Amino acid sequence: MQSLIVTGASGGLGAVVLSHLSGSYRCIALSRSRADLTDPASVRKAIRAIADEEGPPYGLLHLAGGFVAGSLLETSDETWAQMIGLNLTAAFTVIRETLAVMDRAEAGRIVVIGSQAAIAKAKGSVAYTVSKSGLSVLVEVLAKELAGTKITANAILPTALDTPVMRDSMPRERLVPLERVAETIAFLLSESASNINGAQVPLSAR
Image (cartoon, rainbow, N blue to C red; front, side, top):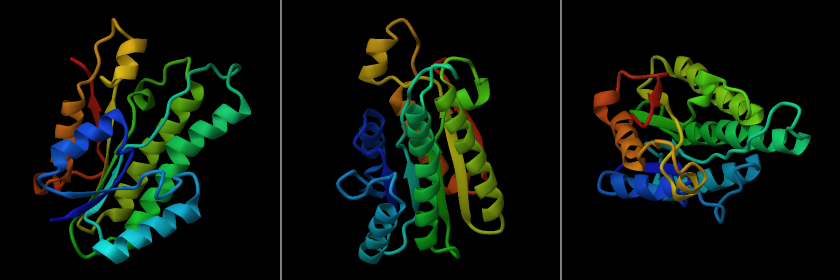
């Protein structure tokens, strides 16, 4: 069974995704107890240990991220650093270290969860929007670097997800079902999606 390194596995989305994929992949959670995603040395050590134990992974499923609202004038230095670190720098580090232990001669998949904020670029959450926009660009550039290999990199850009936290904070909004995200991830991981590279797949509630 092919192995996947998964970040954000303990979150609401992570639980649904892991349940959906459990029959097809061996999902290895890069949990907080295993690695601090904001510490490159910690990530490198954890991923190399996984590769030593399990062999080269088939790919990476990067679900981890965070959200803080606030206009530019409302955003502190700490919030800016937090969003860039968690949503962009952590993704860069995890992708780089996972790709380093993948078999470049074999098929592989890198799938990340971005946000439609990268498309809409609405006001009110500047640090989050910029960090997620950067994540989208990172995936697009990576896809070009992977051209000619059997490894693909794609991003899923949902609107607000149907988690308990979001239901409480946005009770009147239509939210993206988590199972729909899991199904999209499963497709992008599959052989059927082998020719899809660099895509930014939008997911909305309707």
